[in-house]
Image 1: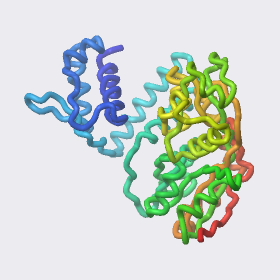
Image 2 (image 1 turned 135 degrees about the horizontal axis):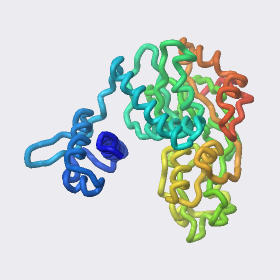
Image 3 (image 1 turned 180 degrees about the vertical axis):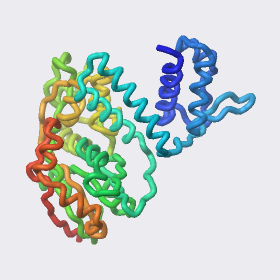
Length: 366
């Protein structure tokens, strides 16, 4: 690898550590000579990487203090020159991957997974614009696709997505921080999804429950199931490392209900407190050998080449308050949301059923 590529790799590695919180504001970056030894390069290459981070506003160099993390996020800009440079770098990456023998669909999946990961790391919502919809809720691959193509669905509009879990989505609606939410909260008492939680968290509101899809949820393990994992009881085995979803996610709500039913104490499960914010992050942790099993969507398991054992088919709904329901952008979305549209567009997503896509149920929260 030449110095021009290596400096960018160093900068990207440090940028990822900053955005993931491994490096906190005020933390000092390792000395350039130390980094040069680690990366087997010259101090000048490391210096160029640090200068790139400084240009993005992520670090600052102070005399006698070294280079420290500022905590600022990169300034977003989109000039024609920058877009051209971005396309150039994307084409270089694409050529490198094609030359290495990767087929186009695999490259596209890898890019989608990378985008999914960075969206999950965002901690602040963007400011609303007249034609911008704010989405907060549970992670879903189809929602990722909607975000990327929302300008085609509603010309000139954008969909800002923040994945924080199903309960976080309903709370954001209650606090007026979102225009729509995504949830798949199962209520064991009624064996229904979302409605009981809406009535508890959105009292006095009338909201539309719009079906996006049904999705298969189950155990994800390494290909070949090397640990021989079979059931909930195996979560208690000392050789099994579980990877969980964060509190407030629909998957976590469903899991806790199942553990209660089977009489399994959460604290007895190795890895119960180790959490990831998305289904794809769970699948990635298993693929990287950081865990042996987790609950994930079949589509996420397939993207990482994992074995999958289905447990349930859950309902994922978009929840839209009356105040937002008649917005033109929402109307465009509801007009577009129909089974044939998503079944054709997202046919590669394993475990998804769009037969009821677009069906609307109104919920009166007393």
